[in-house]
Image 1: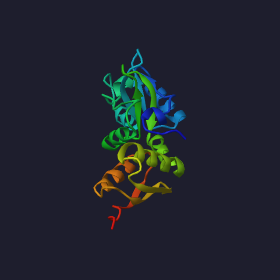
Image 2: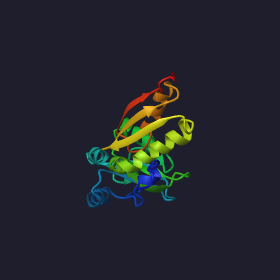
Image 3: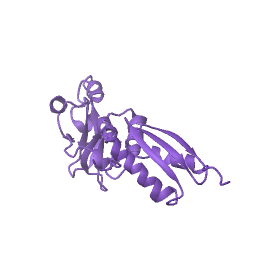
Image 4: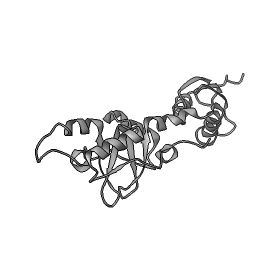
Length: 201
C-alpha cells in the first residue's frame, strides 16, 4: 500500500453532486440514490457554490408562498467548506471536526469540483499494514533524524502502535524521534524506550 498522506490519496473521484438549479424533489432523490446526507452544489462552470444538506431541505421545505426555497441554489449553505486534493489528511480531518461535517468537496485550484472526501476515506490510513508503517518509521529515523550509525533503534508495529526501543547518541533526540513517528500515516500511538548509550569505561 502506498503512503497515504494527502486528500488525493484517499478521496473518491466520482463526486455525487447537484447543479445550482436542481429542484427540491430531485435533490432528495439524488441523496436517496447516493445514500448521502449532503451534496455539493455546482455552478454552471463546475465550481462549488455551496452544499445542500438534509437539514437545509427540512428547513427550506417549511416555507410557503413565492419566497419558498425550491432549488439547490436557494436551499444550500454557503460558502461551502472545501479542501484541495494536495491538502494533508490531518488538515481535512480538522476541517471536518471543526464544522461537524461528514464529507468535504474536493476542488482544484479554480474551485471546480473534482471529488469528495469522507470521514471513512480519512480513516483508510489506519488500514496500512504494520510492516509498511514500521518501514516508513525506520526510514524517517535513519535518513532525517539521527546520523547514520550513531543510533541503534528497533521498530516494531502492532495494530498501528509503534514500539521503539534502543539507544540514541543524545537523550534529547528521544522526544524528536517519538514526535516524528507519530506523524507517520497509520500510527495510532507510539511507545518508546530510548536511552543514551552507557559511557565508555
